[in-house]
Length: 381
Image (cartoon, rainbow, N blue to C red; front, top):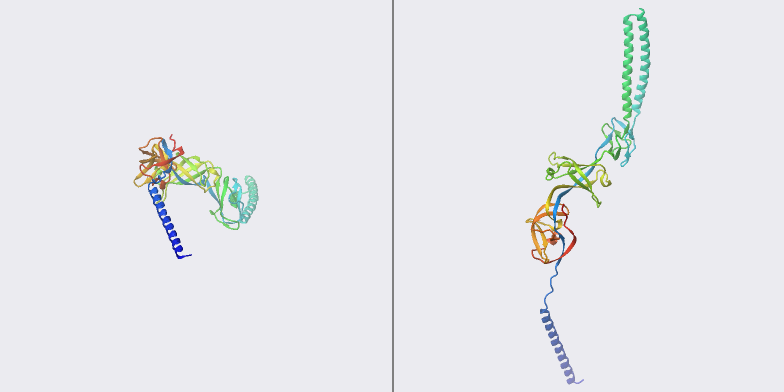
């Protein structure tokens, strides 16, 4: 290829490159001008859940933890010192009144009972003998064949034999009572809750062997209360017993007694009597007890519709234009699900129901996209 042809090719390629660069710059310039003339996309509206405000009465409830106890509970203990031979029950066993639950070593008591029984038999024979002698001496005395002194000695011997018999019979009765102490029985129909001693252990007076709960004498819930609500409660006030662990349902009950705070550091205690174990739970179980401490009338909203801040409590009303209106409210009463408030509200208005993180992002006049929860804030009675 000649030199002129090569130069011509270079010139042609250079011109093509310049044309392509110019075209690219023109396209970019036109695209930028087109984008500059396009308005930015509209900011999407925040979707919020809403619920209707209801006007009515609301109970101010508080929930505290209660421990289930038997109405009557006790311990079966020994009344003497002896080795334990057998314990016939275990935790969870149901026993009837009078059933033997433990047996103690009774050899000493049994031998003592046998010895006293033999002495009583001998004393009866001796009394019969001295009685016969006295009657014979009495006949002799009446026939002038015996002195008065001899008759008195005979009578004294008979009286001494009678007194000895009575003393031995009393000792025998006590020995039989002591023997009965080696067979420990249930004092009432009960459920065994703890087995505290085992065969081979030494039983001592007053030392419990098993713990029991009465089965037919009711149950009670013991609830520790804070000082602030104790003055507003009284015996007979209704309460609701609610289970834990996902179990559903509630049991209606009433306060049976209230104990004020005792020594320093102690809190008041409320007692709730129950006819049966609620929800089939064993004694010692913990469950919730809901107390009604006050009632109020006002605007009822979901608890999650109220924003609690240091400056006050606020709800966020969504108007007909779907704009937020921040309203300051006063709390009148509340429970875990709803709150009764006082403020510039109207029944039927929609309030935002959300977590605190969402409520903090709302402000006066902000547009939102409301989503109806399909339920009211609550109904008053």
